[in-house]
Image 1 (cartoon, rainbow, N blue to C red):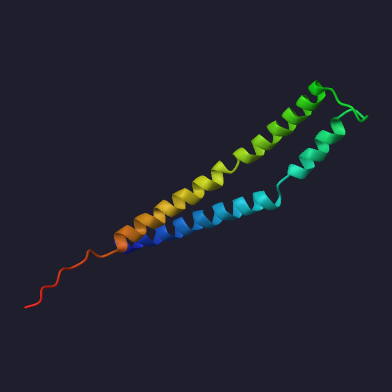
Image 2: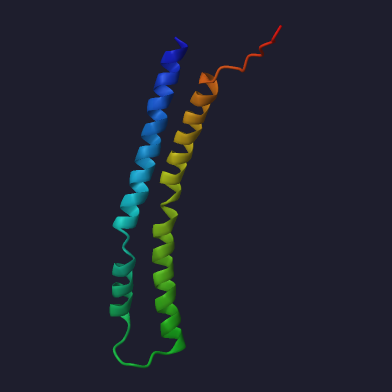
Length: 104
């Protein structure tokens, strides 16, 4: 019965690690940073000279959008951590204690 419990933990642990990793990879591949920059640039008034206030507002808007995007990494990172812990528990329970041998 105990091996069955270890089995589901292993499947769940590997599944969480895999899903978290795929989530991180997809976030990197689909990262909208360039799109955010283009959108912010299009919102700036035309002309070559910007006031410090206009520059600050543009940078703040871009920073807020990027911060919201980067916060999403906490969910897949948590999934990967939980998967690693489950696999670690499984490995800890699977290991047999060392036996001492005495030579006559």
